[in-house]
Amino acid sequence: MNQAAARSRGALVLRHRDFRRLWGGGSVSEIGSQVSLLAIPLVAVRALHATTFQVGLLAASSTLAFVLVGLPAGAIIDRVRRRRAMIAADLGRMAAFGSVPVVYALGHLGLPQLYCVTFVAGVLTVVFDVGYQSYLPSLVGLDHVVAGNAELTASSQVAQVVGPSLAGALVQAIGGPYAVVVDAMSFLWSGVAIGTIRAAERPPAPREVPLVADLLEGLRLVFAHPVLRALAATTATANLFGAITTAVEVPFLVRSVHASPGAIGLLFAAVGVGGLLGAAAASRTAEQLGGARAARAGIYLGAGGLLVPLTGPGLGLFLFATGYSICAFGTVVYNVNQVSFRQRLCPEHLLGRMNATMRFASWGVLPLGAVIGGGIASAVGLRAVLWLAAGGRVSAAVWLLASPVRSMRHFPDVSGVARSGLSRPNAARG
Image (cartoon, rainbow, N blue to C red; front, side, top):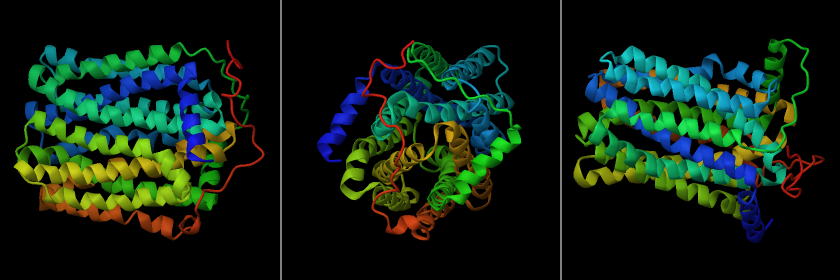
C-alpha cells in the first residue's frame, strides 16, 4: 500500500461517524487523565508531604490492577458487550476521581484515599483498554485498524501536550485536589460519547467453558506464538524501566531540579509533542520501512532516555524534554505497529483474551517498577535511579533481536479474513 492509500484510509476512518464518537470521547478523557497523572503526585508531594517511596507506592497502586485483574478482564470482555463495559468503566472512573475534591473539601484527604482512588481507577482502566482494543476492529474493519490506532494514539499524544500544561496551571491556580475535577468530568464525557455510537455490536457467543479455561487459552495463544511472545517481552522490559522513571520523575523535578508545577507541566507537554509526531509518522514509517522494521526502530529510540538523568536547572531542563520526546516518538511508532499487528492476527472471539494477556505480561511489571524506583531512590538518590532506568530501557531491544522479528520487514500478513467494515458505511446500524 502506497502513501496515498495510507492517507486515504486515514481520511476514511475519520469520516466514520461512530469512530469519531469513540475517538472524540477518548480524546477528552485522555486530556483529563493527563491532568490527574500530574496533579495526583503533586498533591502527594506538595500537600501531603509524601516521601519518594510513598510516591512510588502511589504509582504502583494505579498499575497494580494489571497484575490482579488483567487476565480475568480479557475473558470477561470476550463474554459481554464491549461497548457497555467501556461505558461502565468510564462512569466508575468519574466517581473515583470525583471523590478526591469532595473528601479534600471535607478536610479528610490523605494518602490512603489517593491509593484507593488510583487503584480503583486502574482496575476500570484495564477493563476499558482491553474493551476498546477488542472493539475497534469490529467497528472500523481490519483494513483500517492501523489508521484507527494512529488516530487514537495521535489524540492521546495531543492530550499529553495539552493535559500537563493544563494540569500545571490548574494546580497553581486552584490546587491539585480541585484540578482532578477535570478528569472526573472527562470520563463522563467519554461515557456519553461512546453511548451515542449507533453501530450494532454483535452479541458475544455463549461461553459454556469455565473462566479458567478461557484464561489458559489466551495465555497459550500469546506465549506459543514467537512474534507475540517477543513483543510481550519487549514491551514488558520497556515498561518495567519506564515505571521506575515514572515513580521518581516528579520528586526529581521538584526536589533535585527545583522546578515549579507550571514548569513541570510544560516539560511534560513538550514530551507529548514527541509522541504526537510519532503518531503522525507511524503509518508512513510502516509504509516506508515495513511494520516490523518500524517497530524495531521505535524501540531503538528508547536510547533518548539517556539524556534525562543529565537534567538540571534552567537550560538543563531541555535535556529532560528532549530525551523524553525522543522516547515518546519511538514508543508511539512501536505501539501503533505492534498493536495493529495483534488486532489483525487474532480472531474476533479471542481478541479480549489476547489483548488482556499481552497487557498482563507487558503491563503487569508496572507496579513492580514503581516500587523498585521509589525504594532504590531512597537509598541511592533520584538521579542514580534515572540512569538505571535509562540503561534498562535500551536493553528492551534485545528481545526483538533474539526473535524472528529481527529479520522481518513486515509483520506476518493475515489472510483469509473478512476485511473492511468501512466499505459498507451503513452496515450494522441500529
